[in-house]
Length: 174
Image (cartoon, rainbow, N blue to C red; front, side, top):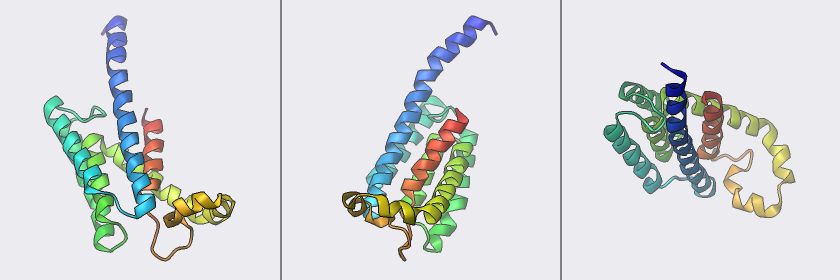
């Protein structure tokens, strides 16, 4: 492959990849905002994203991040294996499972694993450092993000931490 061909591929694929990554991050941010305020993620956000990602996969023959259909299916299986036990055990909501499944359809198994690992690290960091940070937040921010208050019995919303994990995985995988 010539240098020019490599440069042409780079120039053609990079804007698409950047746009897809930005779109996934924006969608996940919307889910995170809704989850942090309502402790639920609407079907409109999750199922629409899953349908669009699945349609793109069928139309283009690869995911938004360029993964082959077999990798996408492996990522979907991984997302379900890692999230359904939490849902069945009452630790995750159905919206969280659909969020992971939609991400799997749009990306790759590495994005799914990285997002889950990043979310776990974020939740651990919030558990350890959140109480000190929470006291420093303005009252208006604490009211808006009341569901993220450290130490509550009902558990933390997952999507805000998942957003952080996806952002981290996209930086690492870029």
